[in-house]
Structure formats: structure tokens, C-alpha cells
Image (cartoon, rainbow over all chains, first blue to last red; front, side, top):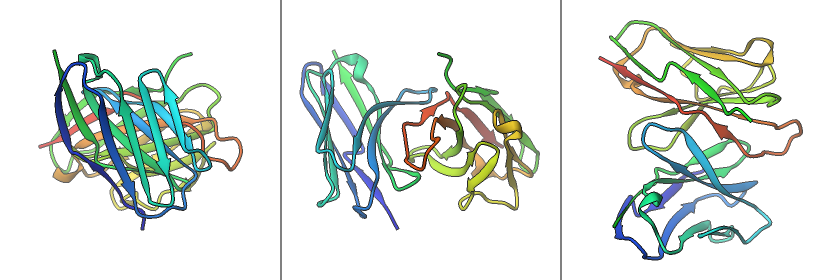
Length: 109
Length: 116
């Protein structure tokens, strides 16, 4: 059974710091892995999608890497801003999305 | 392009009552998903439709939950009767998925259900 774990559960940092959020999964048989952002009272916004054959994806200040063999993905946020404050969820796609429990990020000025 | 629409946004009911949620996916999206997100957890898939057929409902508590997608567009999710543990955010998502390959899912804002 596929299980997805995210560490840390919560993170509070000052503005400007570079951040690394971690995601691990137990079964490497995945189609792809996605990182989502969830703001309070709102749905999920897809940030990055990495296909199983890819090693990383970049979008602006965000970079996500995927190591299928070790069952790990990291989301790197450069020069964090207060607007980055949200919950970040990773999900592996095994013909359906299986989510981790998320990392709640707070960036303070 | 309009996103996934859901209503109502909030609902408070007492246990043993019934409730229904509505979802309108992005136009042209063949696949529709309902997720349950309990506070502090990630979303869990309840049911997946491909057009108006059910692809996966293995985690849907069928004794109290039901869902339909008439004409392969809008969908409703119903809980009857509700229990305290059904308190959660119910998210609807849609994707193009016209082939067998998984693709990006787009999520609606969710319906927050509180069962008292």
C-alpha cells in the first residue's frame, strides 16, 4: 500500500530564507508526483508536476526534484516571501492521487 | 477559462441529517473526482468518474455516501445519514484525461461540512 509522508509538518521562517520541504513515498511505481499549494478556505493549486521519467521541474522560485529509486521528492523555495505562507502538499499518482499530510509554512516579514 | 465550481461553500448540519454537494467541472474535462479532506490530513479520493461512469469508488462509504454524474458534466455527492466523523472539506477536481495516462487535476474551492 502506497504511503506518502511529509516532513516537517510545520515550518515558520523569516522572509528571504531558502526552504526545503520533503516528501517520501513507499512504492516507486508511480506515474508522476505533484506538489500543490493550499490556502485556508481554498482549494488546491498545482505548483509542479514531475513525470516519473524526469528528475526535476522548475517554476519561478520553485524547484522540485524526484528520486524514484529512493522514494523521495523535495520542493525547494528560493528567497521565501510572506505570500508563500500556505500548506504545501505532495501527491503521488498511481492511477489515483495519494496525498501526504502536508507542510504548513509560515513566512513572516 | 472558468475553474471548477462547487456549492455550497459551507454547510452545518446535525448528525443523522442528509446533505448534498454540487460540482461543475471545467468545460470539456472528462474525468471528475471527489475527495474528502479531514482537518490536518491530505485529501483522500472518494470516487472518480470518467464521463458518467464510475472508475474507482473503492474508498467511498457506500452505506451512507452516494454520488452521480448525470450527462457526464455536473456531479452531486450525497451523505445520508451524516455522522460526526464526516466533518471535513469535500473537494471536487476535474481533468481532461481522454487517454489512459494520468494528467493534471484542477481543484475547486471545496465545501466545508460541519456535523454537530
